[in-house]
Length: 317
Length: 179
Image 1 (cartoon, rainbow over the protein chains, first blue to last red):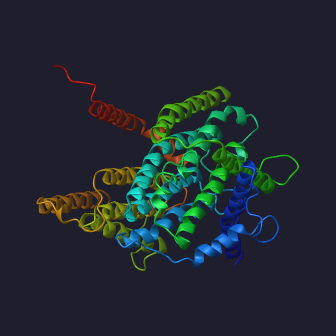
Image 2: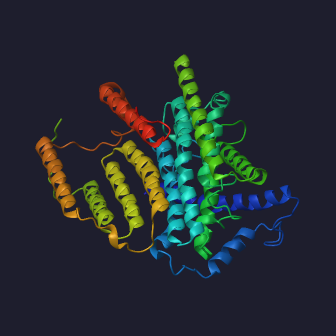
Image 3: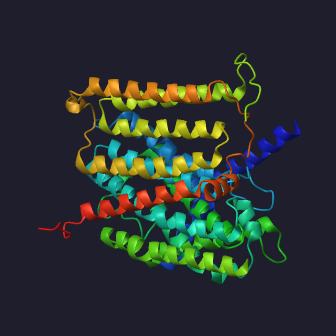
């Protein structure tokens, strides 16, 4: 009985985090972007500095008519948002926020996370194709091309940390982490974060959804709750990427004075702020620049980091 | 290593799950070749690979299962879809997807399946190995690949490298053969 209760509590906490953290990040984006652009952002909903804006948005989305274009492939169109969203929920199960505070500690947790996150992009491709819209197809193809080129540096950078820690378990990696890993794994951390941003299709890597030229790409034809699911997937993606970078490269729950889970949350939100900051600061990359950055920039850097990790490991042993 | 095999009846939980996953894998594989919609074939392939990964999981081959998802679902299917969308991806049924060779293909597929099944039955028969969690974890797998099986592993990696170089040579139009 106690075991069942333990699992139930863990799952409930994960679902609550899955629903609440993206909203906080979304609100943070509204406000941080507004202040960086000398605006106030939402101020009315809920009273205090517009804190309830996203809840109001959610209610609005739920009330909207669910339109499916006549020429669309109805079934694929309907399940695409779920394919985009569910992988992130599954990934959250294995991300530890403190020693023992994890849904399930998998032996090959790192591989699990990378594998499942790669499925999410299928949602964009399916949505792009099934919409029967030329802008959507273009967006879907760009998403596919982007995933193929950025998956490689992402996996290489992550395997460098796994080599350093000598384990593939996320909890094990965070436990092994020492402060001098920060300079040692610095290149890997940057490569991982940048490639992760590209995998989320966040600006400046938002060529697939470029709203000013292909009108949100795969999401052009989506309205109402399905569109909201895509947006939720994007913000859960930010949380997951920040959490992974925290666990792999920033020592997870390690830190002085404050309790572990608090440190994890602080690091996650600092990284989420960086994601927002980057969005406000950089113009969008062109498609060929995107590919060039991945193949000429990030892949060689990730390989260099792998070599560096190997050399230091051999010297230390 | 053979152990006393427990009877097939009643089936244990893992056996039932494994059978169901097998049914999903075979069913979706059949749909891949029978569907008349090109993109749907690629999407059924995702389900097929997923069910295969589930099968590996039930057999405690954790690491292989995640690699299967990472490489096949995450990379190969995405590449396939990209290729289809780049060339021709109509929504709805295409009339010209059936090839005249399909009966030969059915024959070859059945023959291959027959050979594989009979080899497995002849090789292992009623051999039985109990499933222990942790057998397929990264550590035992890595030490057996890089200690016991390191030579085949290296031979395979040279083969892959040759294929890679071949692909580059074929796709580069500025590299010409000797006149």
